[in-house]
Image (cartoon, rainbow, N blue to C red):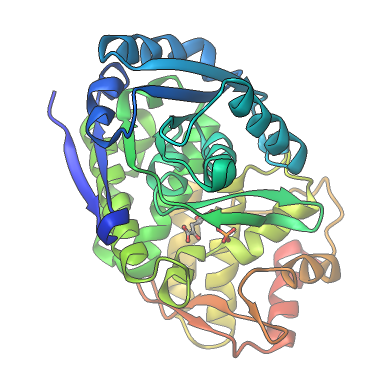
Amino acid sequence: MSIDRLHMELGDRGYDILIGSGLLDQTGALMAPVMRGKRAFVVTDDQVGPVYLDRVLASLDKAGIAHDHTQITHGEHSKDFAHLEALVESMLDARCERSTMIIALGGGVVGDLTGFAAAILQRGVDFVQIPTTLLAQVDSSVGGKTGINTKKGKNLVGAFHQPRLVLADISVLDTLPRRQVLAGYAEVVKYGCIDDADFFTWLEANGDKVIDGDVAARRYAVAISCRAKARIVAADEREGGIRALLNLGHTFGHALEAETGYGDEILHGEAVALGMIMAFRLSARMGLAPVADADRLEGHLAAMGMPTRLSKQRHWNVERLVHHMAGDKKVKDGKITFVLARGIGKSFLTPEVPQQAVHDMLAEFIGA
Ligand SMILES: O=C(O)C(=O)C[C@@H](O)[C@H](O)[C@H](O)COP(=O)(O)O
């Protein structure tokens, strides 16, 4: 089976992003060229491990790579200081060396936590991302953002630490629950909204194939998404400027996640979908984007089966959401830099957003 090979152009920290079916069984051989030693330490979770760990370990055996592994509890709650400490201690217990390759086998939580542990273990060791969710394949495994949540908010502690390789095995998505596929699909749509209106149009025609498991459609969507992300990250690795475009929908989305406690009520990708609709509604309200484009985005997400409205079961409060947003990493001199849009594929950054417009949009969105 052929492999799509993209490259993250970051000089001596550059790396390949490999996309294909059945890559798990080739892990050892594919990562051998970027190994500094002959040992690996695999981190996975209690949902992914039982299904895929053995295949990865067998491929390491085949390539003559010695290995240890550990399993964390799945879910966003594992992305905290306590789990980080436990993970680093387990790496030290296993006598990981500076030349040991850390492997993150799992979704965004495993990737973010493991990547951060790799960033700080012995002041930084290499790691490989093997993302097993659509969200992780199109977004979190690429670009080197690693970290954990704190009581104050999402991803507030972490490091930019680029992986040495990303292996996106499309076939593992076949076992992913539909809700998780849809959550990842939100991040795919994001790339169309940022600067690729043609891709958005393609998604309108083919999104159901991506969600329902058509191999070619999935592979295309993952490749276009990773290519877009790699281009933006290569231009602005540490988010001094345009990388913040990748945060479209996240300022609002992170506030929804904080409000709902990072649990199953709203998954990260669902929060991003809702947040993108909010960003487009705010843009339309400010006269920057046509209402028709906000409707088009919401219509597509709804047609794919994503939540586009907040649950009426919960009492939402505008002030509380604004309070969460004030802790956003894009706040500068007390002002949030928003990712807004002039239309589908025309996103841009601006700190010039009247508080009243944000307030009014949120009030309308929560139905206050
Ligand atoms: O890679 C980036 O840059 C992104 O912003 C991608 C986001 O989709 C991703 O969720 C990221 O982890 C969020 O970063 P944060 O800086 O807003 O915590």
